[in-house]
Structure formats: structure tokens, C-alpha cells
Length: 307
Image (cartoon, rainbow, N blue to C red; front, side):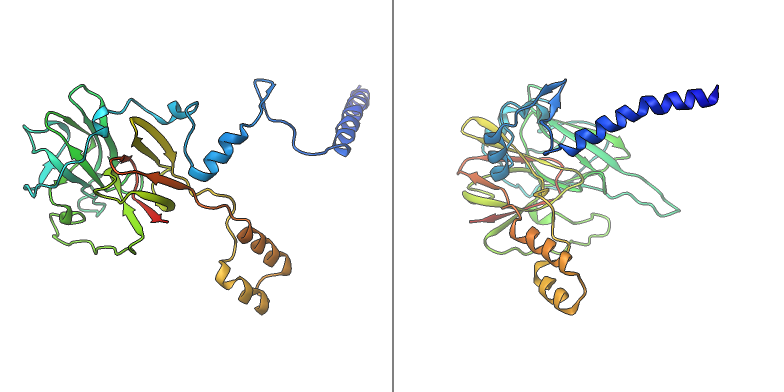
């Protein structure tokens, strides 16, 4: 009985195997992708535009909004006021009542994992306008969030702080960013070339915090793929900040020739890396005009290089 079953099994499988093999012998490329069984035609124009700017087209923008963004983000930025630092803990605060309005730097207090303390500080900060619409949101925590953001706080707005033992320092002096109030140790300032602008999370106005012009999206550091919201001409453009611009060379260009000559890489590895270097796609660019506003949530650092 067992032998009969096995023989029948082979009779069934053999035609299927032949069908698969015959299909493979005529394979001429990857088939058209399907969605719900229907072929999907790629939007070549949208693909080309994304490659140049990483801007999301209107058809897909909705996927990049967790909630509507406030119209106040179109308004000019505020100034730092040099007011005294304020510490926010879990709870709700009204700007103009519980703390002053103005341009500020939010800074999360780091967690303390020493055995005698072991405090996890995770704070999610959301700022709402007077209509209850979001103007800013950020998670402040090491690794899974970011630790600093620059924000415009307007009179009447509400700040909601949630999380596990959160402590958020509100600096009204831009030079105070990076200072731990307990240790009073200031972080070393970073220097950039005149053509390179480094931004952290938060709000920016073109013409005040960054010059107008064409910029290349350079270094991007974030706990996850971040998004830039570009407020321009009464519209919001969504730019996906990803450095996934194709495969990277396994060996840096400046040492590729040397390694090949020394025999540290094979000829195949040399050719593969050389091809990756020669065909590496250009980095995306963004056009910024005076008066434009930028909103950057969940970002450690974005470097823009001016053309």
C-alpha cells in the first residue's frame, strides 16, 4: 500500500517538475509585478522625480501624515529670548501661562542605567496650536528617539508631555543647547564649511536659519527613516530623507586601486566596486526659497550642502 502511494506521488510530482523546469528554460526576465492579481504599471515620471528630490507625490502623501499639521507652521519663526530654562515633566502646559513663548530648544534628560539609580527617561512631546492641531511632535530618548529639537512656541499653544519619568529641558538661549543642567558640561560645538548647513529636529525658516538656494541632501542621522515637511507657496511638500540610494561600494574609492594592486581584493571584487562607484546615483536635492518653512521631526542631524 505504501509503495503504491509513493509511486502515485511521483507520478503527480513529475509532470509538475517538468512544467516548472520548462517554464524556467524560457525565462526572459522578472515578470510584471502584480497587486491583487492585477499587473502594476510603474509610474516612470514619479520614479524619476523621486530619484532627483525624494519628494513624495500627491497620490501617496497621505501615508506620511500621522495627523494634520497646523497652519501656524507657515508663519514666520520666533526669536530666542534668553528667558530662564524651564523643566517639563509628565503633564500638560500652556504657553504664555506655564512657560514663556518664543523660540526654544527642547532637550531630553538622558536615562541613568547605573545600578544604584537605573532611571529610564522617555518623553514624548507634542505641541498643539489653539485649535488643537499639531505643530510639533518628537520622542526624546537615547537610541529610539532623539535628544534635541528646536521649536517655535506661540502664545496659547499647549504642550503635552507623556512617557516614563520624562524630563524635558526648555532652553530659551540657542547657545545653551547640549548643556546638561546637572553636570554643566557643554557639548563641543561642531564646525561646518560655509556651504554646509547642519540641522537637528524642529522648525526652520528659510532666509533666517538657512539661506535660500539649491541644496543636496547629504548626511542623514536618525533612529528611523525621517521625513522633511517643506512649507512653500501655501502647500506642504513631503520629502523622504533616506540615504538608500543604491548599493554602496564594498571598498572606499580612495583605497580601491591600492587594495587591488596589493592583492587584498580579487579582480572580480575590484570590478564590482568600480562599477558601483561609477554608477552610484546622484544625491537628492531640494530647492528652498526665502520665507519657506521646514519641519523636521525625529531627526538627529541633517546636513545640506549648497550648490
